[in-house]
View 1 (tube, rainbow, N blue to C red):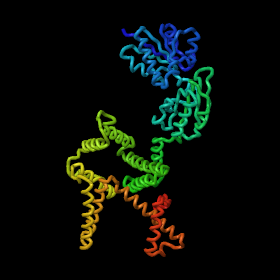
View 2: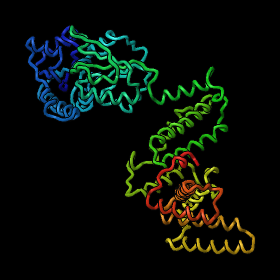
View 3: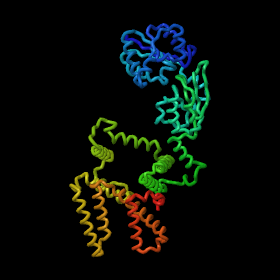
View 4: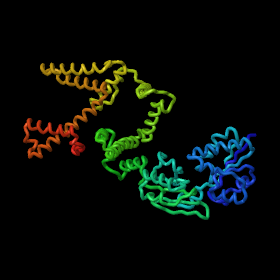
Amino acid sequence: MSNILHVVGLGPAGLESMTLGDYRMIKEAGRVFLRTVNHPCAQDLLAEGLQAESFDYLYERENSFERIYEEIVSRLEKECELYPEVVYGVPGHPTVAERSVVLLVDKLSERFQVKVHPAVSFLDPLFAAIPLDPVEGFLLRNYDALKGSGITGKEWLIIPQVYDGFIASEVKLDLMDIYPDEVELYVVQALGTKMQKVWQCPLYQLDHQTFDHLTTVVVPPCGEGISMTKLLEVMSTLRGRGGCPWDAEQTHDSLKPYLIEESYEVLEAIEAQDMYNLAEELGDLLLQVVFHAQVAQEAGEFQFQDVLKGIIDKMIRRHPHVFGDVRVQNSAEVLSNWDQIKKEEKGEKAEEELFSFPKGLPALMLAVKTQKKVAKFGFDWPDLKGPLAKVYEELKELEEAMAEQKGIQEEFGDILFALVNLSRFIKCDPEDSLRQTIRKFQLRFLEMAKLAGQAGEGLGDLNLEKMDYYWEIAKSKEKNKEIGNNPEIKAGV
C-alpha cells in the first residue's frame, strides 16, 4: 500500500472553525507541514505544542508564487518517499483558492495516496458577513486572474488574499476596466474570528485601505458594468417590447448600408491616426455585429454565441502553427497554409469558385484579390518589368481608342487593372494609395482657397491661371509641412 499525503484544511479562523476529525489527525501525526503559520488556526495549533514545519521561508526566498508551490510539491514528494503518512495543512478549504493543492494532486497522486480532507472555507463566514446570497451567483477570482475572466458585473465578485496595497492597486486598475470608479466594494478581514472587520469603500479608494493576508475584497452586482453581456442586453432591450421602434423595425437587409458605412468610418479613423475616434468607430462596428446577431436570434437562425464559436474555432483551425504542431518559417508559409486549410474547409474544386469574392467589394480591392488568386496558379509576371510595361501599353491603347472614339471605357478600365497589378509588385495598396492622394488633393485645394481668401479673392472669382498660382504656393507649403491635418477633411469635406 502506498504512502499517504493528507491535505488538511485549517478553516478560515482559529481552532473553533477546524473540524474535530482533522484536529485529532493533525495532533497525532508524526510529520506535519503548514503552508504558512500566518493564520489563526496555525497559531492556535503551535500554541498547543504542535511540532510542524512551515513553508514561509519560501515566500521570502522565491520571487513568484508558482515557484513557491513547485518547491512545496518537491519537498512533500521527498517526505512521502520517507514516511508512511504526511500531513500538509493549508488555510481555509484545501480546494478553494489553493494552487499548491492542485499541483500536489496533479503531480503526486500517481505515486502516493493524496487524501484531501474537506474543511470550512472562508466563503462560509463571508456569506454571513455581507448580504451575499450565493444563489444569486458569484465569481471567485484570484487577484491576478481578473483580466479576461468573464466578469459581467451581474454577479457578486469575490477576490481573496488581497495581501497588501500593491496588490490592491492592481485589483483596482483591473476592476476599473469593468466597473464605474464609484461602485461601493466590501473589504473583509479576519473572517470568522473575533477580529473580523467589514467595511465599504468606493473602488477608486480601494488601494488606500489597510490590508493583510486575511483580506478579501467583494464587488456587489453592478448594472453599469462594462462587458459583452451588457452590450447584448442593451441590444435585446432596444429590440424588445417597450424598446426603440426604429431598432425593432430593422432587418438584415435594412442594416446593410450601416455596416458598410461604419466599416469605412473605421478606416477613416485609422487613416487619420485618431485613436480616440478609432475606439468609438470600432464600437459602432461591433454594434452592427451584435445587431445582426440579435435579429438572427429572434428569427431562430443563430445566436451571438454561434458567431463567437465560429470565429474561435476558425482561428484555432487556421493557425496550426500556433495551436498545433505545424512548423512555419515565415508569414508567406502562414498564408499558404491558411489558403490550403480554407480550400479544404470550403471544398473549392469548380473553376467558377475561384473568384467567389463578395460582390460588394470596392473595384480596386476586387482587382487585387483577383490578381492574387490567379498568381497562385503561376499566371503572373516574373518581375516588375512586366506590369510596368503593361501600364504603358494600356495607355497607348487608350490614346488609340480616344482617337477612334471607340472602346474608351474598356481601355480606361484596362489601365486601372494594369496599375493595380503594378501595385502588387511595388507593394503599394491601391486603395490606400488613392485615398492618400485624394486627401492630399483636398488639403491643397483647401489651402489654395484659404490663400485666395487672405488675398481678398473668392474661389468663384479666380481664373485658371490664378488658381494655378495659389495651387503652387499651397503645394510648396505642403512640402514644407505647413499644412497639417485639416479638420474639414476629417469631417468629410
